[in-house]
Amino acid sequence: MSPLSDRAPFDGLCPDCDGKLMCAWHEITLTYGDEEKHQKFVVDLPIHTCSDCGFETLSEYGVRLKHEALCRHLGVLTPAEIRNIRELRGLNRPEFAELTGIGEASLGRWERAEGVQSLAYDRYLRLLSVQDGIHQLKSVVPKLKDGLGSQDETSDEPVQDRFPGLFGLGTSIDTQNGFKLVPATKTT
Image 1 (tube, helix red, strand yellow):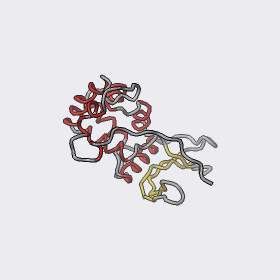
Image 2 (image 1 turned 90 degrees about the vertical axis):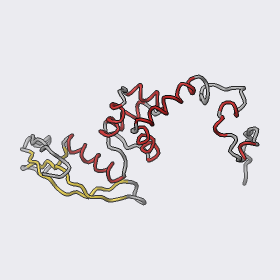
Image 3 (image 1 turned 45 degrees about the horizontal axis):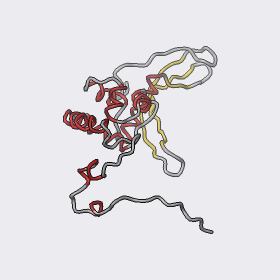
Image 4 (image 1 turned 180 degrees about the vertical axis):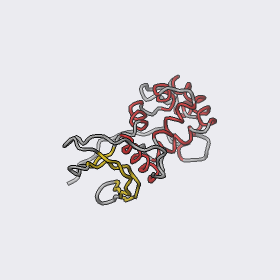
């Protein structure tokens, strides 16, 4: 039995020839990333092999183990860990998405092992895994919904009043009044 599992995957029938699929654990080298910057890592996976035609496949369980191994290799949270962060806070997916600003569809993909979150989102989720982190966010979100930082509305309110935490630090932002977009010049 693989160290990644506490239960054995099922055996079944081959989709090609209806022969019997037998399951055995194999050490597999996986490649992640594009051709130029790919990474290789080794994982034990339950491979189902047809005793008649040699067809090989992974069960849903094996696909999940493969995804979890990839997450561990990349050093990011697994789908179960992401779901656990949300559920421990007593939030459903739409509530968590609204609170965090993370897209509900993205959360769904990450929780279903259909994609891997970026390192930035992973770090954000880890901050939210701490009880104080979610309380801090909840204290800020109502202010954002009242128009401070809203991307859908424009405000005539001075930027210093809208984002007081950015000013008074002795940086160049204290003296800037704004910026103006100008069309790019065409160079030949």
